[in-house]
Image 1 (tube, one colour):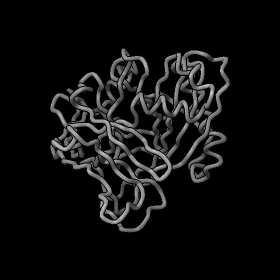
Image 2 (image 1 turned 30 degrees about the horizontal axis):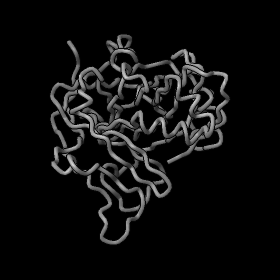
Image 3 (image 1 turned 60 degrees about the vertical axis):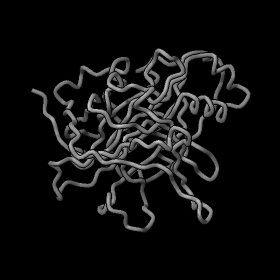
Length: 293
């Protein structure tokens, strides 16, 4: 019998506003009188999430849109406080793993983020956090349109050649220490999500650029999974967009408060890497960059 946990998670609330106005959230101080966000959320208190540990080998990127891989790193725990070492060592490890896993011609990493939960989270301290915090709102990181824009942004006049081939946006997420019992990551089986009705494109507006992601409306048909006691060598790989319409449209995901977590459990720490994955035009030399949000 499957082991379920009952917990809470935030979802985009049904709002007539979104039929005419796109959801947005400003990531900078707005002008006086301008709302920082028009996103309204609803918290679902009785969400069921299945422990995938007993069936971990049954997941695939082609079906559910996610899987666990063994990702051994040369990075020590303390190395993840050094951004230069992350770029030099860990991003290469992720790129190589994704290229081998997916049979890609090229992997171009464009973002990495280290998250270390503050002891007060999810209660806001009112002060800036040193580290990014877990996300308690279900979402998909990107859209295929935004991914295409990122291809242009990274590759300039080579972009059009690259865009003639298939391009996926992929997230790789792993703990920095384990076992994870505090705010683990949950992912939703993409086969249980109706993209046309369950997903809502939204803008995260930074001072220099805009990220188009997708918020998700709650549905009882959705099937959520997590892996109990996840270890640092166990990395989630999950799809976020695909230029091929027959591919995975994007896996919704979020951290969640585990009901069995104890005050003595160490706060969750993790690293995630977002990458564009190319399958054609391998002779086109592309650059890559990494930024920390």
